[in-house]
Length: 169
Length: 80
Image 1: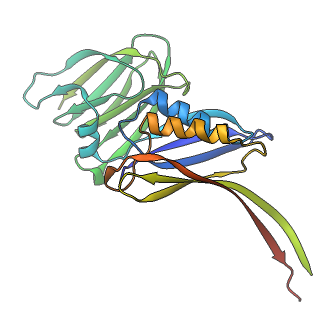
Image 2: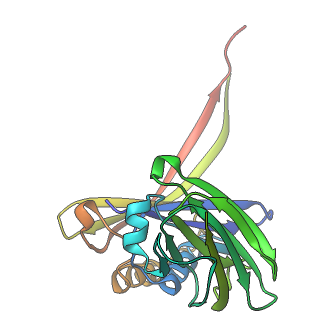
Image 3: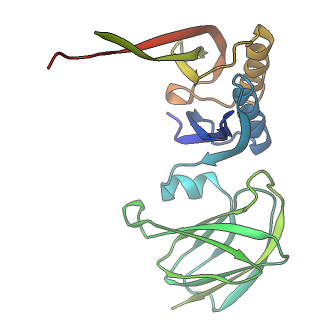
């Protein structure tokens, strides 16, 4: 069974938020198609669509299999190491071996919402959510990391470039 | 004394998958004017983009049934 789900948020005639969670979403489904799907589900009601959010399963093995790592840094590489990565839209994954600290710096003034999940096993995973604008999002954490980046304006999955610095301990 | 307090309306969409299994999506409070074209539009989106998966990652072949369901919840006052 698929483990991804879609959360479709809309507002009713009283401006009350209504959330609909749809399970068994294909993890490989295109984000634009998912947004269209959320729009068509909402069109069956009198509600107004607010946002469509995709939630992938929080299992590190599957997450790193499913998402192509933006950068991969091995234990024996010299650090601090800075890479500039282009993120094409919604989700990016980062896999780092070893413990250390991570800094993420966007290249523009967009406000980005960052979800940084870390821990050696899925049981040890912690989730750090930060919202920042042209500032460092930092976390001292235990590798491997898995990082999800999206704009705070959830309907705007724009691409961006980031400088990501990892300093192993 | 019997007092009717709420009526809940929903739209149940039955989905079929390539492995023969079925699933459903339930939409609460659908609009009164849901048309077959609305369901067809959603169906095309699901099938053409392979959005939903079933057991063992089977593929959804489409919406096979759409039913409007009304549930009436009645509160029964108990005697003191």
